[in-house]
Structures are given as structure tokens and as C-alpha cells.
Length: 394
Image 1 (cartoon, helix red, strand yellow):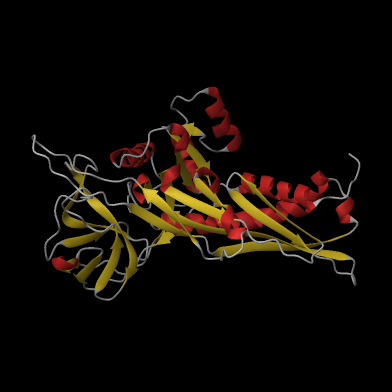
Image 2 (spheres, one colour; image 1 turned 180 degrees about the vertical axis):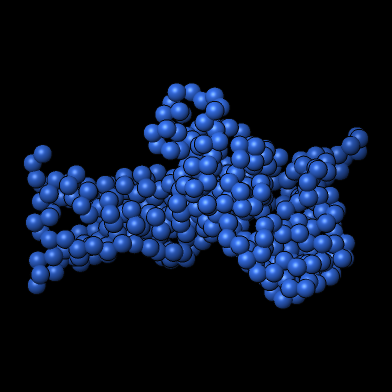
């Protein structure tokens, strides 16, 4: 291929192609794009409102019983700007796009997308409160099936194309070995033996991801009980012998069972919660307990003295296998303004990922310093459509 001068649009489109390819987690979740950020008056840190479905109760009998419609939404702040900076010579600009991509774009975007993927996966996994399996043990096929059942119980759509599981490579290797004797079609067997991953199985799309979140539990789970059951909106007043927790710890409360989201029938398992922030005598968590009405999520509020039981062993690191529907999480990017007075600047959007490239010229050294930026944010918008499994990692 003849060498040509690379244009900013050609370079940026190649940047986005590589970014899309490297987005192991971001590429499987809901991506939203907002072009308004680049317009006059838009500020970094603006937010997107994502509306959630309304919830109602069912009447029995012929007498009308009206109920208010309460709109619910979550706020996703697009406030984080990350980028990678490179410099290349005028001679390198005459390479063909394939060589330029291999030498400059791919290494730069690999590290940028790895960081974005890790940030999103770490932050949003910690917001998930459903858990199945035996902490410290690689997830078994039966446990993954139970994780999928958690999604079903919380009414996640059952379209297989949108259901995923991400786990780090050691637990993936164990899962591949465990499933080798089960039936798979030839394409999936090829993935197992040539690529070392499962592919599609058990109604899930399996991805090996070394950026899977590893959670270290709090240092003391000793004898934690509720001290004031009247404060259970989203904060537990507690009494404990130690009670040192970390954000992301999962626990249950004695007496508070899960209910079906629509019928409100009591289920067999206790409702699970996740720590958001912890103190010496109070524990902030999500979701808040609601025992009546359209948003009811527990069979009853726990009583004073009810035990809090935490998942896992204190002060232990567990890699988290994450099973989820793609709409459990959202990642958003927005256009950044194009500066003037530079050698060139371009902005492109591909499949919900917006990137900007700006290049200047260093006349003293005949170099082109260049920056690639992405403005983004993320949020677990339906954490009930996801489930964690504390793996072994060994």
C-alpha cells in the first residue's frame, strides 16, 4: 500500500475501531452518547437522567383504588476525562494506516481502554448485592446457573444475546475444565480448546477478563446485630464486637426475605444488601429495605438484635465473577469541544464511544505532540439484574 499523509478523521476512526475491540466489559453493557456536551454552554460534569420503569400494586375486587405514579430515575454523571498522549515525527505520518495503527494507535488505546474498562468494572461490581456460590471456590456450573436464576427472579429480560458473565483467567480455566465433558456445539468446543474460554453456554456469553474486580472484605465481621430497627431506610444502626467493613461487602439481615418484584410473594432466600460506606456504629447500604407498597423488596423489616451475616471471610481477597444483563449497567461518553489554533483536531463517535484527537506541531524538534481524550461516566442502573460470585483466583 502506498504511503499517504494521514488525516485526523482517518486516525480517529482507527482509534475508535481499536477502542471498540479492546472494550471487554464496556462493549457488553448499555452505552449512551450525548452530543450536547460539545455545544456552547455545556460543562464537564453534566449528568444524564436515566428513567426506570414505574411500579404499581394490584387491586383485588371491583372497588377502584387509585395510586400515584412515582417516576424513578438514576443520575449518571459524565464527569471523568481520561486520555493518552503520544508524539510522533513527520516521517511517521507518511506511514500507511495499518503500520501507524500497529505502532502507535494500538499500544496507546490498549492502555487507555484497559483503564476505562477496569474503572467501570470495579466501580459497578461493588454496587451489585446479589451473590451466589461458595467464597474462595471457583464458580461451578451449578453456581453460574443459580446466578442466572437471580437475574430471572429480578425480572431481567431473558434474551441470551444480552446476558453475560465475566471472570478472571484462573477461574475461567477451572470452568473450562469442569465443562469439558458436557455437550457443546463444535464452535463452542473450538473456543474452549483453542482459545481457553467457554464462549456461549448456560444461556450466557462468557468473557475472560483480567480486569475482573477483586474484592477484599472488611477486617472484622464479628457478631454484628441491628441496634435500632427504626432506622432501616438505607442505614443500619448496629452493635458489633468489631464491625470493620468495606464498600462492596455483601450481607443479609435475619428475618428480611426477598420477595417477587411483582407478586410480592416471599421467596426462600434472605434479601442481600451491599455496603456503600461504613462507620463504627452505622452501616450505609443499598438497596433500602421496603416492606410495603409497589416498591416492596423484603418480606418484613428485621427486628432489633437481628444478626447481619456477611458473605466470605473477613480480610480476604476474592476475584468476582460477574453475571449480568447488559442493561444492568450504563456507560456514557460525550463530545468534547474542538480547540482552535492547533495543527488539527477531530471528533468522532462510534457505537456510543466518543473520542477527540488534538495534534499540535513542535517546530524545534519536528514532532507532533498528540492527545486522545474520552469524556465518560458510568453507573449501575439496575444492579438487581446482576450477580456476583466470589471466586478463588488460584
